[in-house]
Length: 339
Image (cartoon, rainbow, N blue to C red; front, top):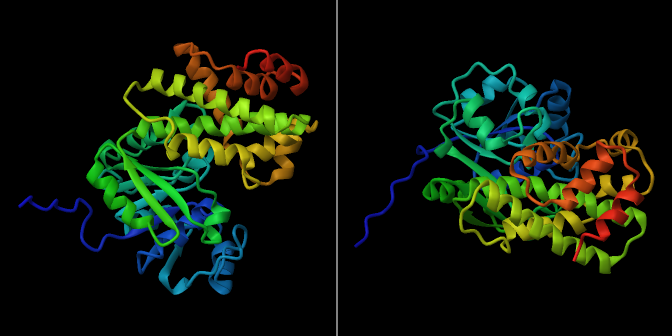
């Protein structure tokens, strides 16, 4: 008889969340399906007070009700880290450094799951690598949540699928037990680098999809754009981290599709506003939420200066956002490159 695997996570392990946006709120809903207590870092004490009083996040997914007797809130990141064995990071990638700037607790023995779909902008690092280098979390302790899953649909308990990537597959399986529930199905992979980069790239592709939608291009063209987008993503991730992977799986193609087509996609919304004539700054101000692709396209463009992968869609978005090329002109140029 095969010997049973020993659990890696400690018995009765505790879970903490860093972040209080819509995705963090959706993840909290998942976690509380499996854990009787959650530690939750919310920066603003006024938001904590309102949350405790009303039982819902005052700013995001306000329709989701929580039993706050099961939540320990704190605006002190060190207190949340100290109380938690497993920490789930769910803040925009551009703000993770500031979110952790006051950290003094030792993270070297912690287990961390990144739910961040972006890069550290000024360092062009995937989040897992930054957590490993800056916070001294062992790379084998780091997991990544990916897959086609909008927070708004989680709040409605609509069936969704998530992939947990971790170099240690056994630990990945244990991480799935934190978020899997009757409306969340999970799979595992050891492709932590590919899934992180794919999650970054699909945001850029969604901005492109939105730009073309804003310019009045139809569904026929969108199908061609997305077909080319998945090929572009494959070229890049296979060059940066060459392993055998199925780019058609939900962590790659599925996430790309939902981000490019969904009404809930903030990156697509951001792109659509650019296509309709908004300036980058005006679109950002009106959205009130972060479109990760804005930061990602600059980072990917800079990373690709080393690899020189053919990335016409990424180049198009970069030229519009950072080169100030009018969307109509840049998009016409791109249409001649698509097949």
